Amino acid sequence: MAISDRIKRKPKASAPITDFGTQGHPLDRSHPFYFGFIATLGALVAIVLMRALASTSQIFVLIIVALFLATGLNPAVVAIQKRGISRTNAVAIIFISVIFFVAFFIAVVIPPVVSQGTQLINSAPNLLKELETNSTIANLNSQFGIIDTLQNKLTEITSDGTLIISAFGGVIGVGKSVLSGTFTALTILILTLYFITSLPQMVDLGVRFAPASRRDRVSRLTNAVISRVGSFVGSQIVIAAMASVFVLALSLVLGLPSPIAIAMIVLVCGLIPLIGHFIGSSVVTIIALTQSVTIGVIAFIAYVVYVQVENYIVTPRIMKRTLAVPGAVTIIAALIGTSLLGLVGGLLAVPIAASIILILDEVVFPRADNS
Image 1 (spheres, rainbow, N blue to C red):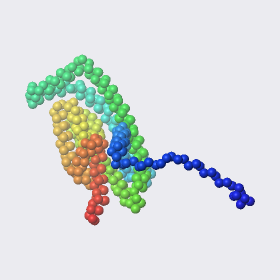
Image 2: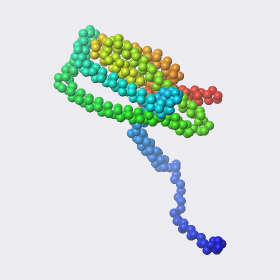
Image 3: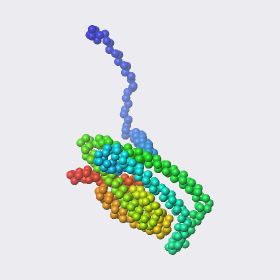
Image 4: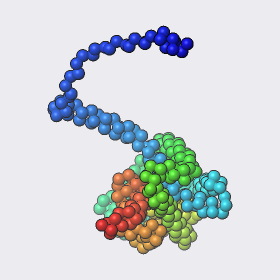
């Protein structure tokens, strides 16, 4: 029965072959038109990619900052984990501490900032008159008219009502800045929370791209880089805390109002590379000027002297001890990073330099020594 079925089956008719013509000669890749077309197409693709990256540059900056903060907070999370607490609970403890610090900072700093700003505006005419009593400033005023110009401008603003208009415009501008800053801060906070929670998984995923024979070494180097970034963050916090303690003592000695609030402002400013102390010294000097010109000058000089001691003695030693980076390399890296990417570049410059030195010591130099 099976044989008769096979005999009865008829083979299926094959599909007719369609004639598409004779294949032509291949394109001449050496032809100028072909080269120009490919070059133009490549340029267009590059332009589209550059515009896409430019339009999303702010997002990349937020991601980089969040990743930097996650690696910086990782040592604290690991230290809590060593006490037998899970990583999720350790991350929760760190974030609750950060939120508590931010709330404390707002509660302590905002009211004095408003009161000091109002006091500065009210005492501005008296400060200008006090400046005229100084013989050197009086001579400069007679030659260049600096004090007279400031007094005339202050009189014009307060007499024709433009102060209210400018203040209203300033309030709107500040409101927009506050909303934008709040949204950015929340975005960074959420990204940092995700990054620090899944940091071990991210490292394991990245290590899998390396060959199996080198994954152990790549994993060790990656963890060492993360450790150095955490050391940098810890060192920066220590340096900022030292500046805060100095300003607190200076404020108590000079009798400045709200010394704790001033110290908190300097603590936050000290975390910003290069320009942080410029902002801090401006705040301290302006608040000191509300008392008198003499106290303002003393506060400014004392702060400048401390910054020089910190930049050339304290910072190089702490950074060299925690990151094994020479002091000159620390300063140069911070300058280059700030000039390239601004504040983000300044934050990332020193740990990146430390990571490069680590890779050179562990990978490049041994090969050169063995060759």
